[in-house]
Length: 501
Image (tube, rainbow, N blue to C red):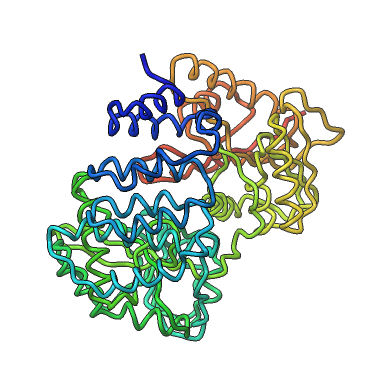
């Protein structure tokens, strides 16, 4: 039977199983209520736990530090720092730093900064590298706490850049047609363009990511060789030109590869550390508080194409979308759907989204083709609240109603229904529900649409849509688009037939 925090502490007082009981106590403290229970047991006397910081067993020291850190007592920051400073075992040192997270480290900050400088200047032996890497990461995370991202701000809007706008393999041309200036080249993954007009590109809504090419086409999969090639490439020049400011840049390294996860992780960690060393710490690895991502994409011959994603832009293309829910469509996908459907829209239309979520489909539709009236329905109250806030930020007048579509009544008919259909899973019961949902949808849509009114439907249930179109003679399919490479999602443009007298 597992012991609680009080029992574990009593065992420690008796000197029983110190290492094992500290590990168990550390685990207990992650559970709710254990911290308060232990503090009540200790009654302000932390001498026992503090004494373990000088224990002969390094794993006892490590776990004692983490237990003390979990208790959140401000006076322990200086104690933990002193133990950290005196610690000789490299594998233990990062645990002291983790224990200090959440404590007031201001009395220790200068000492921590000095240790960071020492580590950055140190060339570790091969067997030390893993532990030095962990300590560096923990030090930076601790020193950056509360400072947040954005130490550098993108200012190079007048520069010329070789960029990739990722789009997937189906609709590169939709994004390419929105580019002005520069020659666009369509690739499998998107659109490549060399441009000196990057600011207008940042407003294009249909690409997924904006990535920068470097002047090295391929690099090897050996961590140190890859790091050297990256540092000797145009990477540092790109960062300096685009930001016109000094100080280290904080990055994360991502690897897209057919390798096993463990192999990818090993390559990413070793290469990131080598980049720090090769760049003289002008580039610093940080897994949570980074300004750029260096992405290594494996090619067919086993080498890697390096690409760079910056997080220093002011991202405004979807600035209105402050609220979202789990089922929300990605805004760039909603923008793509609206652009594909535009030939079937009309300005000044009366538009309804019966499953509006946070309103992304309606906003993107209206940005492209202004409507006269926009209505959104949803049975999920928090989504409606988010939709109202998003519409306010977008400067759109949209009438959002917390109501079930299938009981909704309106005094006039609509020109258009546009929606991202609910996804209720693919289990047997879920599929039966989906079948009924689509039948009820077409029945209700028929009662709310004018003759020749359009349904613009984003759905992952192609078969149910086609079934309804076979059954119902009052709707006809005008156009269908596969929206992803696997064919899971489709966009349907459907017209309600005009009734004959």
